[in-house]
Image 1 (tube, rainbow, N blue to C red):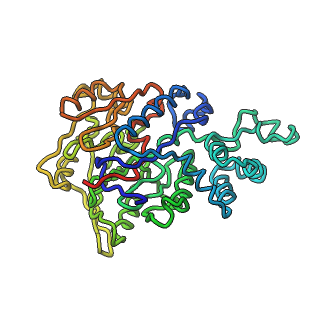
Image 2: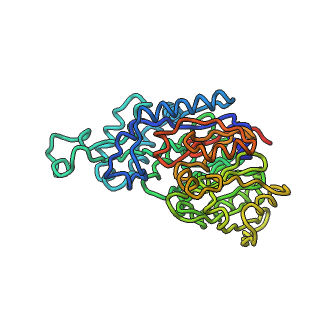
Length: 406
């Protein structure tokens, strides 16, 4: 089955990742803010950490597929896909790229190795690589280290460009222009790769104007999803997504809970403050979990969307819609305000469940990890000295494509 995700905790069977690449070595102190980083990871160490992470996933029964491999396999199908992709990639890369479109297009089309082509688009293209002997004003004015095609260092967070919901996807419109190019890879893979072509329904499209990102979309059960109203996901996008889910007769989703969280960097997505770790348990960030507003969106089989604000906290709402007497909210930092703030910054609440009660965590969040272990959660720690500098955890670095139904 191409895609089948009806929970956040069912046994992980197939997952999409992106190994950090040369794009990280194009980060500089001056470009960190623009490229949505707070620090510069050391690439060799980040790759070693990511390889160990992939090893954990494979050892626990998951087939791991790489974004860069699926994309190069897609372009290898021919039929003009390479040329079409290059045109669209340049058109979504800003004014510098469009202003030098023909030069960039000629350069990219000359790359015969499709894996190298994909990597080049991810790593970026510098002015020096396209210089024509310094005869142009742009060559003389721009530093040779400037980019006509900017790097895409956030790509190793594969959770965000699209999100799997049931047997379909939300192909997202990203909050920042810096990341909007990322969705192009998912668009081509999902529409053309033989594993997915003609087998996937689209519940949102990246051509929509309102932003929504995958880290804000959590699939709780076949009938329930939660979507964060956050720094990067707008309420209008959630309404569009909900309407499309409810309009599909085959889609099982009956309720969308929109969870409004503070629009700030440390809480950029819902999954940075709230992830499921067992059938009745979530790890949460205490600073926000008691002060969020929850809205219910329904309307399956009806002409109009129904929206109402709930008069209960998130834990009570989750228990109600999950048909449980209660849920356990395990607080990042174990109730210590300083530990919670420190470990939240390093994604202590961003865990990846690979089967009920077993999760992958960053080893550095030892206070939260001990709390989880004491609560009966099996934690598998991974080294995170470099990967965590990108402000994303194990959940952020994975897009589950197939999970066993629970």
